[in-house]
Image (cartoon, rainbow, N blue to C red; front, side, top):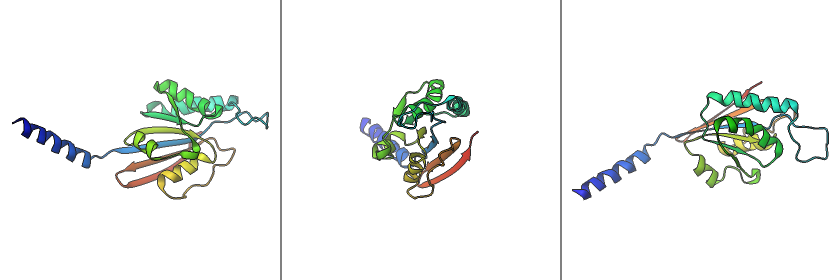
Amino acid sequence: MKKYILLFVFVFSLLSSCTSNETTTYYLIRHAEKDRTDTTNKNPNLNEKGVDRAKKWANYFKKIELDAIYSTNYNRTQQTAKPTAESKKLEILKYDPKNMYDSIFQSETIGKTVLIVGHSNTTPAFVNKILGEKKYEDIDDNDNASLYIVTISKDTKTSTVKKVE
């Protein structure tokens, strides 16, 4: 009898995993406005407008359940992610923009809702990598309001871009 119960549990688990309808959603943003007073500074902080925008992002994501928040290891991206991470009680996980959307990242985020904070060149590149096609160009250097949303459900990948002012 135990063998049949174990067999039933195994078959049920196998069928459940095969028919899984996990949806993965990625929200990708560029960091908020940075301090441009020192053009030699390669790792500037956010300026006052950027700090305000980071708070607005936290407000935008207030009603969206996030499972994880990823950011590059720069002051401006970390500071953009911080208000949302604090409001969600999530740790900011770092990703390497030279190694984005690798198999490890994919397996860690499958079936989850994830915020990714990057840069004018890495954000659209990350979206393109997820989609498997070059759909988006780099973000204009003055654009800190674009939100890319990528949804993966089974074998279907969709994306959209909207402005969040």
